[in-house]
Image (cartoon, rainbow, N blue to C red; front, side, top):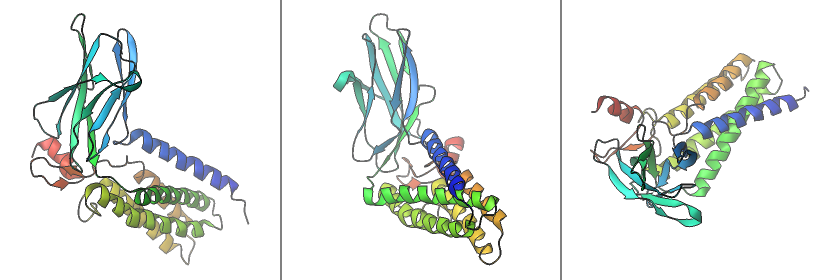
Length: 283
């Protein structure tokens, strides 16, 4: 039997690279923004995800003396007036202000303004492109941890299968079956549980909605189902290669992009392209 070390090595590298990419590009991960105060570059992280029952604290570090900060926020997506809260001294030399929590899937957009007490000059952070934060209900660890772990394993097996199939390794069919099993459990058992706890609905992808997180799982599953089915009796390794590439592509879409969003006009949670189009055409 052919050695599998090289396949495993590159499968792990590809999988970890995809995870890092998800971490960097995900719309719910903290956003890094820099500002210049007193000719000094100040870098901070700004939250883009919060829990529905708790105000979200925004903490800033390394702010020079003589600069007073104000946090501006409003419901998103709306054209309502901005509300303001002042930053105050916090722990460990930080300054802090809190964003009021919203119901699950509710969003706020916010930016920060600093004013110099000596000459009243101002410096804005994210005013032209406000930071958007989405709130969710708490998700228990017993649902979230298996979902993340099993998706990681499914991605690993998918990459492994694709590499083995590309070189016609004897075991590519076996790992293709493992891929579809782990993807099924992660994406269609624990995934809907996480979605239900966080936003109140088990599934918001096709045919019930346009949530890209749900739909990309569905697309990857369909791709691997086709590959496994048509490889069952006859070897068609190119199908497994295509399924692995498809899974990399769909999971390169940032997690939670165009996901559940609370409409402040109707009080209902909408998903996917519905809020996206409404932001463009203002309907």
